[in-house]
Image 1 (cartoon, rainbow, N blue to C red):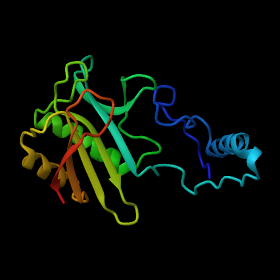
Image 2 (image 1 turned 135 degrees about the vertical axis):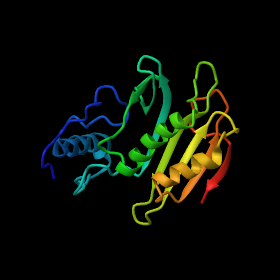
Image 3 (image 1 turned 45 degrees about the vertical axis):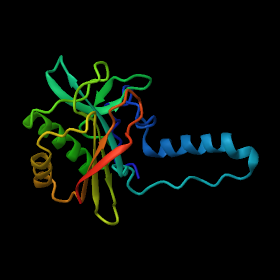
Length: 194
């Protein structure tokens, strides 16, 4: 299983996973011990069965977006635990590679289309989050653009540009979350493609 263990470079900062600093065999052992300590009193706990390929398996990928003033660029990634600081992530060891590529390309398109990211402090800006779901069996890819406003400038051109980069996308949805909340998705959505 563990041909060569490479620890995650974001392990201490990122809130996405807690065991990527350990080789996979040790991750399984840790999980087994935890399961026994929690459920062992109730009965026998079967051994945890590991994956043949324990990387890039997560088919639902969520990224928060923000503008990093110090670096003068848009970043995407995951919130640092207990905060709303975004740890920039372009590629994650457990997330689907295609989903990560789509998110990075959306970030580039924001710049090309002169679109802004949402600012939680001011309540202004356009794109808050991107959610990508991939069906490994069907090959279908859904992209959800969570915006802070229902107004989507250059919506059709943006959609065409994204599909040109990723023709494998089968659905694009705009979800509007215009409330001051930590909830990812808002109540209203519109299908842009698919």
